Length: 300
Image 1 (cartoon, rainbow, N blue to C red):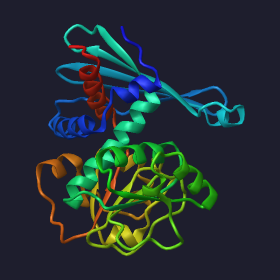
Image 2: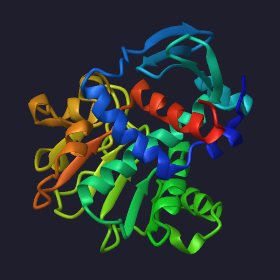
Image 3: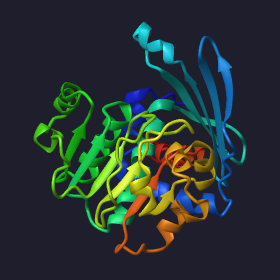
């Protein structure tokens, strides 16, 4: 059974194929053809947790096991460790193992790319990323891969941190530290922080898509009420958003306003309106990534 490390997992998950697989999985998930129950959370060690996230469909089943230990930073170790085990649905036979954090990072960035493509209706020309962590790196890689002519602006509370992230990429001219104001012409904003207070609360703007990725707990919030109240709302998993999307919970959003990713894939949105897309994640997207990896690895 192939066991892919982080680099091999990234190579097996090209973004073009991954975005298509996410769109297919979104419809299947909505129709009940992919089963993805709530994740199980078990305390582990000092302040750590073990997360168990399975998903099954007609072709494969996956199990993502992730350990999150915030104290690892002091030990100069990654905060998150994990593996995704991929099995044949017909027999239960394990087919391969993938690096959990890389699967999560790349499929999350792919979901953001699907949202931007579907809501914007054209290739983004300028994208602002707020945040400089691991997810920011995955999103820059996705943007450079899918939209090489796009300028990526990076904003952080520390200008030096943003500059350091920009310097990591081969074409720093297209990845730039953001000035104090949002540059004219930014048509997508992606928030990628663990903020507990909104980092983006601008009046809704037609032609600018806002994607919230980082706030994944009820006490977190990246996007403010001003932006949310005047926008049409989508979420990758509205059921999960009810428990995890702190932005929407804090703003008191009516859940009937929140449309699923599957609806966005099936129907053209009215682009005369402003949009916010909230991403909370589900193991269904890990299953979509596993399908791409099996094809890349040549495993039937």
